[in-house]
Amino acid sequence: MTEMTAAPVTVPGTPATARLLAEAARAVDAPDLVLAVSRNGVRTVHTGGSAEPGPVPRELMAYELGSASKPYAGLLLARLVAQGRVRYEDRAADLLAPGFPVHPAVRRITLRHLLTHTSGLPGLPADFYPQAVPRWSTDPYGGYPADRVVRAFLRARPRHRPGTRWHYSNFAVSVLGHTLAAATGTPWEVLLHQQVLARLGLDATRVRPGPDGTDAVGHRRDATPVPALDTGGFTAAGAVRATPLDLLTFLEAHTGSAADSPTDSSLDAALTEVTRPVLRRGLRHTHTHTLTWFQHPTPYGPVLFHAGATLGQQAFLGFRPGTGLAVAATATRRVHRTDTFVATAYGLLTETL
Image 1: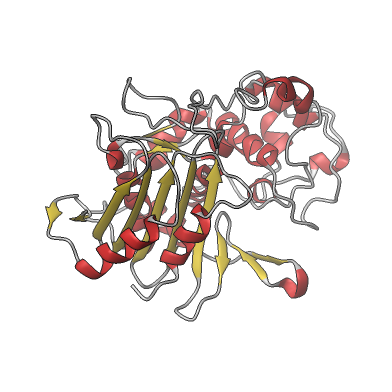
Image 2: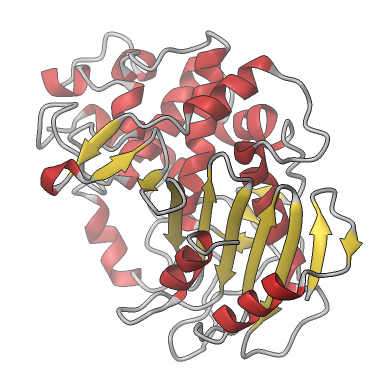
């Protein structure tokens, strides 16, 4: 158990926070588990799990974020908008395939619609499932490449008029990634690195597996390992891999507590923009969303968060704006119906830390 400044440099731990993390960890059953908290740039990290530790410390391994990759896509879009390179109201089809004949509803889908899950697109393309089902537990996405995602979008028939209903969609956010790549003439991976990862000093964050031994290995419920995730053409929606320490750095940028943050007006504007509520949905409009985060009220103020899961791993990212509190959590066990991981990490975010 260690506590670290955002640099990070090891310093003596805070006993109260250390005890809280150790108690929370007992509620989660996973081969590898990391619970990490930052308060005004001072970090406390708990590592554990049922598996024997490997040669690389758990907090230095890269974990698959799954859908918790989407805040990275959101920050990238917000920064490109702040730079004047694209607009939220730009139509995706016009950027991807100018002049290509598409359904009128597809023509109306904007970059904002894609990111906020209001495009009217389904969660995944209809023709995704026939190739995915036979390998659902091993490699459902790898056989569906980027050009196929784009073609599926251009021939889509949205279920609802864009902007009228919220429906969570990996398909839509993936299309956003390909659209930004087309608009800038830069591959998604390079664009994300240049605009977000390098600028925030996220040297241990990537969208592909790293050198042998540096990536966490996911597990099924019976503890058997699963192969590394190949997201195929759905990179923007779920391909990010990061160490828990890099996750804290990413969150600290949102709370304003990152150490030695470079002055960058477009990045500062983007970080502010992605925390601003933009839509409400659900019964009595109780669910609030920013461009890329879920937002909940608490007695201590709003919390912003996003969770993600892959075939054998889980991740949670969250922070409380204005308080300097951020929580990052990772686990190498596939999510299941009675899983406690997300509830445990969310509970840390709403504690009186």
